[in-house]
Image (cartoon, rainbow, N blue to C red; front, side, top):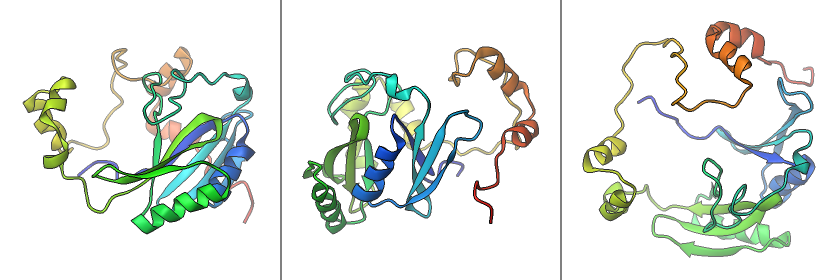
Length: 226
């Protein structure tokens, strides 16, 4: 089936990239594996920290980011129960492979002076909760088995979410993609989601052939010569 196979990397904005690198390497145990000038973004710095061979944690620092205010309830949720603006990340949960690994992560984080709440048993997972730099709301969770939709999709909550039975059936079993490849870029439709580039630049980008974008926007060589 054509669907994502996992998360390659999560990218967070930082006012001070060193502070974030220190937290996610020393406190969380993720090795720094890349730090370079952000491709195509003047003044930008981009870091990658390894979670495993298939997943990375990414930090971006751009000029003047430190001047943008953090507003709890708007830019950040602040807790796993807090609100933030639509489209923002409410919280991030890392994965631990076992209960023992979860406790080990709790103890590692606490040993760096960071307060950790938990573990808490949610049935589908057991979790610990803590904060990261710049008011990040973070979690580490472990599950003993895959989530069973028959037990965890509540019909009453489907109704609260405005999802009817026909829609629920589609969402639980998304249709596989069996169409052609490549697919031409669709015509611009303002009702669809769009990236927030300047209007003229964005229109030129979506009109450009894929091979032109690949040729002109790719940065394939590492910054350090072999």
